[in-house]
Image (cartoon, one colour):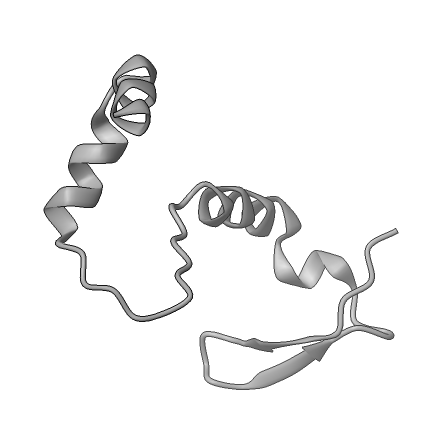
Length: 75
């Protein structure tokens, strides 16, 4: 069973709190599942302190083939 307790902003600007007696169908669960999957696949980078990295460097890294990344990490 899926339990929700989150605010949902509707297209008309009204806020509905999901949970309790609000039907799950109101949120379009299949669409939400797709968005959750898509956002989970995005690259997340965490650092202990602030670092400056050019976006191009990140794009270059994620576009490398797996073997290229492994070689880069070994160097």
